[in-house]
Image (cartoon, rainbow, N blue to C red; front, side, top):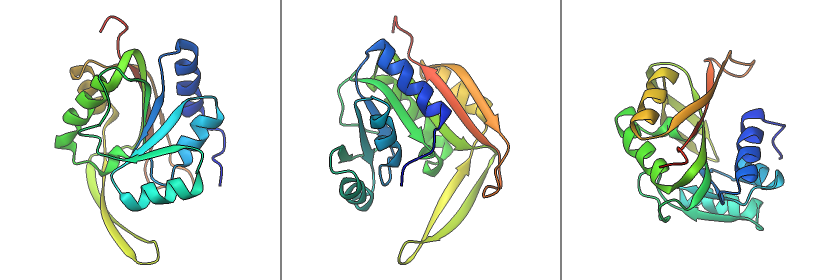
Length: 187
C-alpha cells in the first residue's frame, strides 16, 4: 500500500535532492513504506530497523530497495554519509532519556547541510500499546514535547527550520508533530 502525499516527507526529499547531499536513511523503517515513498520522490533512500522481522517484511514488500538491521543509537554508517535522515514515528519507541544520544548519532551521520525529519506524537507521557500481528505485541510509546525535542536537537548541533503541530485525525487521540532540522553547512 502506497502512502498518500505527505508534505513533510515531500519537503525533505526536495531539500535533499536539490542540495545533492547524498542518500536518505529511513531510520526505524518498519515495513518500508516511507522508504519506498522517498524512493518514488527521487531520493536515494534505504531503510534501517532494529527488528529483523521488520527488515524481512520490508525486503519482501520492496525487493528493489535496501533494508538493513541496525540501531538508531549506533548506526553502521560513516560520518557525514547521509544527505537526509527520516525518523517517521520511530523515535516514539525510544525512552526520552536516550534521545540526546540518538540525536547526536543523527548529527554524526548527516553531511553538512543534511536534513532531518522527525514525526512523533505530542505530549509528555508513556503509553503501553498492544497490537495484533498474528499474535499480541505490547510496546511503549513515548509522547514528546516539540519544544523539548527542538532544544535537544540544538544541543546535538541540529537546527530546526520548520515545525508543524496538527490536531489528531479521526484515528488518532493526540496531536502530531513534524520537525524539519538541518546540520549547519559549516559543521
